[in-house]
Length: 235
Image 1: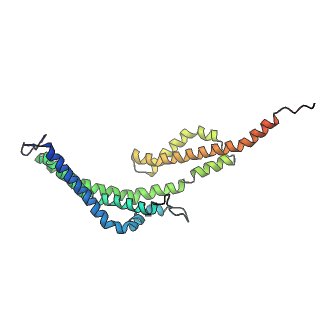
Image 2: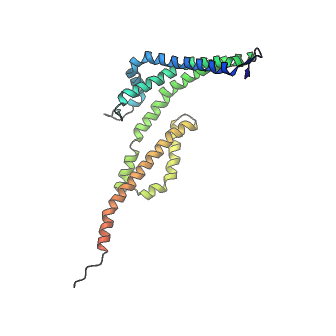
Image 3: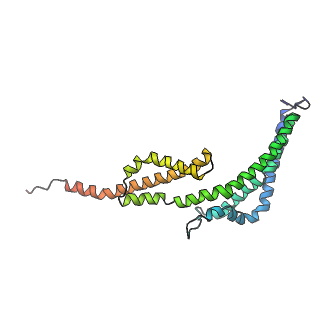
């Protein structure tokens, strides 16, 4: 049981649940209505959203599908997410409509500006990420994909040793977070999202370098074992 502060009359729990179900169904219906209107433009939406990434791909590089159904499912999923984003004002309005009867009058005066500002800040954050953060991060990732290859080549030609790379691992981790701090907005979440993939790329390079050195030493060890065998005695 809960009480309405305006009337001080108890409201049955079943009524709350019924209203909640109704508002959730309205939110789902709004999302699917927007999706139905955008589905025919799914490919154009995919092209628009992926533009910051495609602009920073290396020369003659293209985006590829990693699954048979990806060319169809990826624009489909992206259009569904865009529909959810466009439906946010209506969803927030439904949330407000559900909780408003439980608020006092002075609380409602505070909540309405909060609702409007939340919608504005939501879309402002999306615009900031699309036009500023995404190009910066994608540009860095496009240039950093060579990290495993560079590490493997350095180990292969003998410039650095795998043990040395493992020894400097703490400094590499710190360097990744410093780069993430410089290239991302001033918050630990964005910094971590950029630093951890860089660190993982380094670890992949160290792992591949270890496998290469191990295979390159196997023939030498086999020859040494053969040479260490005592000569056969003549009868």
